[in-house]
Image 1 (tube, rainbow, N blue to C red):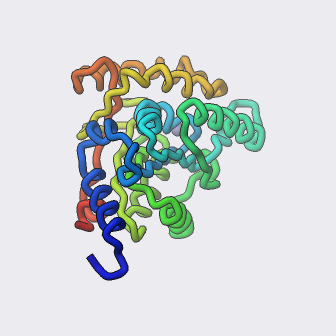
Image 2: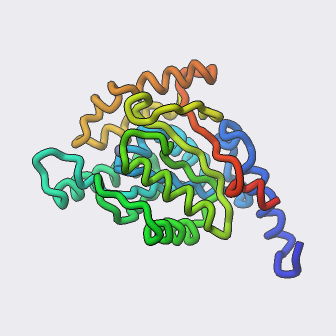
Image 3: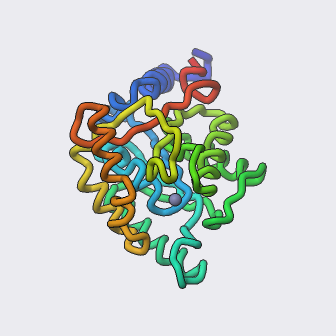
Length: 253
Ligand SMILES: [Zn+2]
């Protein structure tokens, strides 16, 4: 303990480090009644609807336990509505995302990139890093990089690069969307039981009216929840890949 760290700060930091290294399934059960165990959780997604469909149940669960949860959308879904201009689509999809976040009881922010035209370069790595420096998350969910959509890949790459640069380390978990069609070669390391949050997740996803929510579920999300639940031994689950290595919180022990 250095002289600048108070005893209370030391124990808070130590408890968060050990918490963040717990299996995600255990972490999702932790309660934040004690402020020293309150976690800051960020979920990064390429478009409005990606965080909701990939890990909406998990985000609702962390929020219900009293943790601080925020979704960061890389774009506003500018390219996602046929027959609408980029501005019109962005306005519609921003409202849909806001409504979904109210249902999940999470905060949200937009990083300012454009759907279908996302960029991974030093400028945007810096912007993502600054966002994370300001938020100081303990856990960050982001999209899996082996994905058919370039915006999902961008969300993933920018998160990983920010994780290597922030002073405060955070634990990254990758989530899947539309397995087989978008997310590929995904072998989970962690599961979160969302049996009790499935309905909340469905309601949040159905806020994205412009994206054909029935189709989103039909394209595999319902089957994913069921199949991941079978793997985890519960009625419904969401699956994650934990990123180990240099940006893992355990590296600062
Ligand atoms: Zn997407």
